[in-house]
Length: 339
Length: 256
Ligand SMILES: Nc1ncnc2c1ncn2[C@@H]1O[C@H](COP(=O)(O)OP(=O)(O)OP(=O)(O)O)[C@@H](O)[C@H]1O
Ligand SMILES: [Mg+2]
Image 1 (cartoon, rainbow over the protein chains, first blue to last red):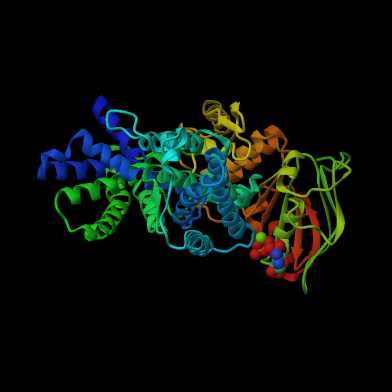
Image 2: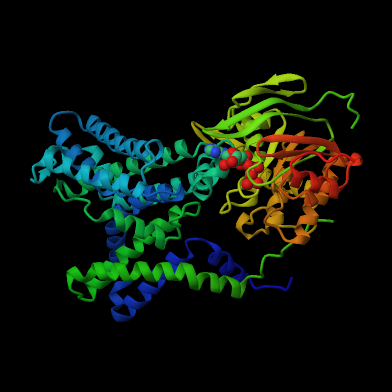
């Protein structure tokens, strides 16, 4: 083995991480926008990017589990919106903690039904969760009748909403902390626990997992449950931050959360995922929108750039990174059995 | 292989139908400790059905299975594993996107500590166990236990599955077309591994194939199946590869 510099070694390790694509994309965007406008690289801008990316980031955290297990969850955006709305509505009649708990349970109920449909009724998860997306949105309109519902003045300044979305000084919001904390906790669970190992195994090869005594159905079910519960939590942070919840809150977020996951190195086939990567993917999308706004791009054009960034991010993961890895890493020594 | 020993496993009058297809009809045979049995038959002969019944995936319509003289009631591959019977199939058994060490311990992960319902993996111990598996199957150069299974060759994958079975103290390993997708060189290596484990560890094997030539030099005894019927059972010293081939073509045992 020839000697390698520390820096090169560190670079190799970095390239081998699934998150590498998202990190490179973020650095690329920041370089580009900062060259255009040096004000881009500043703490307030970064804080704004993180706050704006926090909800997609949280949804992507849960989504990375369903993807890792080999499924999708499109219903997250409705669960997000519904939990936000219910949280607000419930506080009008019961205590805020009870509201939080009840809305969480209902969010989890969506995951339960998703899991039931996919693993027991064996309906394709794209169809099952799309159905639940529409169903959830309908319930939102039924409850709100299309009107905006807001937290009362006394409720919004109470402890829980402050915990979920309050300012914590220096321009930092609790939303950022929640996004990062969830990412770290669920990254650890995915890669360092038995449960996480089963999620990845089932996503990689359900039949093989079954032959080792792991129930693919039950494991996927847990992934759906987790994904919806996190989406519900994210929705309640949104209610706490926004105070007012409209009936279309969450619209379009599901596909963005999947986009964030894919940019972050999650495979749509399952078995390969990164929670940190998924959150970085969300931060990338948020950086993109902030940068475009700063550069004065027409507001509604943003989504086109999301599309391009998604395709670019996937191409980076698919073509450029493997190419770079081959350039710097020795091919894994293929070894033989003794004869 | 003295037949005075009790059989390790005994199939007695096993029958199984799938609708109108009679996949197995009154199949009986035994595997003795330290024996390698070649279970041979053409496509659709019922070989895999035998395995699936042993693994508890299918319930036989009739007949019994005995493990060391005791009637066994196996309902899942895990249960079979606990009874010392493991299975190596052509293409299932490994999660390709996962590291080797996570595959060796799949479903039976080593836990370092528990925090509430969360069980943290002991990845170092899993790496060490993986090296033990390497030792069992005689992998010469050091493959990092963190390597993804997708980077391994077909032969290495089969080797890992066999090694894993031995690591979990299997007494009988059932191999269903274990070398079908392998290169000629890797076939030889897997076959050598089987013979080696049989000699050194005394492990029994049921080796399933449709190609008698593939298993002839490995097995001690042959059980021939044809469309769900056992056409014969014969020891290697009482037959030859050409006579076995003739038997399979004719659908009846050709005696010397
Ligand atoms: N689950 C099932 N449902 C219906 N028919 C089945 C099922 N499993 C097996 N069969 C039928 O039973 C017969 C025996 O099948 P089996 O898979 O045991 O054969 P095999 O000897 O393993 O063949 P191959 O060499 O092709 O693997 C075949 O006719 C097959 O079509
Ligand atoms: Mg078969």
